[in-house]
Length: 323
Image 1 (tube, rainbow, N blue to C red):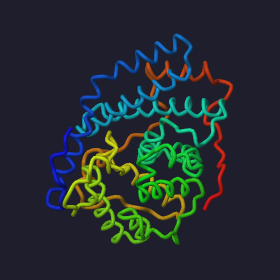
Image 2 (cartoon, rainbow, N blue to C red):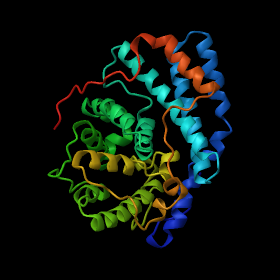
Image 3 (tube, helix red, strand yellow):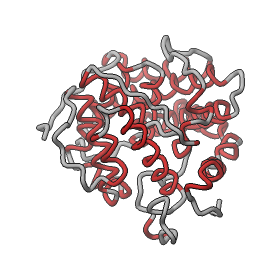
Image 4 (tube, helix red, strand yellow):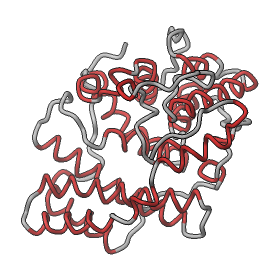
């Protein structure tokens, strides 16, 4: 969908609505049956890797449905979110088991990389820190191996976004807050770290960050930018499309990382429309015990049939020195 709005401080609410519309989530819902049919077909033929790939597609389709329901604050939003998480959880189990069984290098791209970052933040928002911390170890290995720079163009080109995201994973893994880190080149990300101990300053930094985030999602380098970036320069991790554009889940990962590392608290309330949609303001449901239905049971049974000997939640070892 073409971008038709120039983000400014005076049209913040309209800009947030434009981001939601351009994600095309409602349109994606209409195609969700194809992922299920492809999953079943590959499973019936014993094609393990393609079936795992389609389990990711199923989870992504379910997430889109859940996010649309949450945006509209419908009564079924919670159960749909729990269902989407259950499907994604089983995909992660399948994904990590396959990588481990094949002894894949950390430099080998993980197709679920982007969704892992989204669900890590959403799990943190829902009080499921154990899941967020577990996949942080895997994400740390991907970042520290150089695999993210090699395989994810937007993360390679967007140095501030990449370094901020990597910092969150390292902080979750080590429980050490990077007080002394030089973040002068981190654009709007930097003040989120330097003001974290000061609630009033942090609230102001949140507003600036949300302005920056909205502008990036609409193809501008900042809220005061005059011209949109060229199509060849959409190298921002915030301009990747999808449901996370309207849902700043990285803030929940930041909150979890800060609170675990320091023992302090972090408040994500601030005067910005991006933080005031129903995505952010509706109470978050617990995600465990995992939701069960016929499709979730089929995906979990696939894991049992393929990797039962590995058990669940396999320990992940950090394989690179922390800097």
